[in-house]
Image 1 (tube, rainbow, N blue to C red):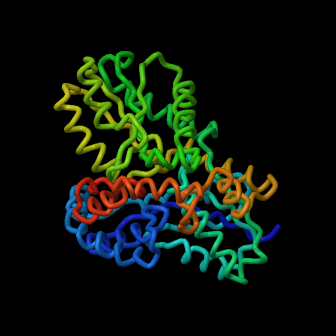
Image 2 (cartoon, rainbow, N blue to C red; image 1 turned 90 degrees about the horizontal axis):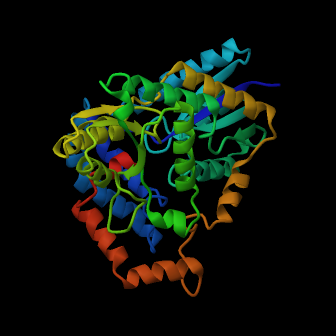
Image 3 (cartoon, one colour; image 1 turned 120 degrees about the vertical axis):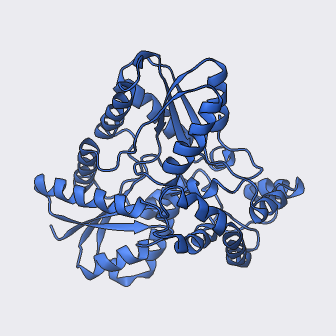
Length: 388
């Protein structure tokens, strides 16, 4: 059946403090993150924002050791997945493709073509689909595939999202159970699911399925846990003057403190690896906020990393994909276009749906306010954690 490869997709993070500036430039250069009415302004604005934000962002990374552990953990996940598949009779090569830092997706594609891979399973390490995470990587891959003649003879299939996978749900439930059992009264603890946020317009205007998948995933994990604990779902890392998915994590923590909650178990539901959003934002910022709110027993469920049940789940996903009809990048992107993939592929003026939305925002100075906020740095501290 030919040589098989698995391409793991993630967003990446700086390997050292000197990488923070270039990493931020790559992040803000992505029109899936900031879409401007004048495309040629994208890179100059990205450079300006990155230049203004580098020092403050470096200070955040200093709090977690001076770098992002995401590459190391993703490569460890890849090694564990390769061994698991080998134990199950499937010999594969694993490739890691990051969106905004090394090893870039382009580097991974170059390696798999050099190795003579004949079929590939594209597996994003995001359980839930969002146009700002999996969607951005899929659109990049579609362009690479279309423009590279060497890829035309490589068979591939894509796994869009996998939050319903039973092994994944079991692994999450096991990690939550472990943290609950560390508390004096486990049954009284409140389980707090914190997901990275997206602007509400992604869901309302563009039809991004992210919120629906996060909410359903939360219910599935609670069902797998099978405990009577109360729970909350909230969204972290908002930025800018526009409305994001609610409730916001910081507001929800304060509200729980006012209601008398004293034992809190925080679950990073949309992350499968430790990174700045778990290690700095949750472990440091939200822990301090919880203590100020009177929540003194604050425990954070670790990310899945190389949890054996999780690695088995990834292996099962790969094997199922190899047995199923191929799902192509263009098919996925066409499905998303049916719900007006956001941002639009090009700026539209005139009486079109996207133009009406954006022209209205400009009239309300929302666009100008966003650019001012990005340039001045107000509220941008959490943007780095949004997507890596």
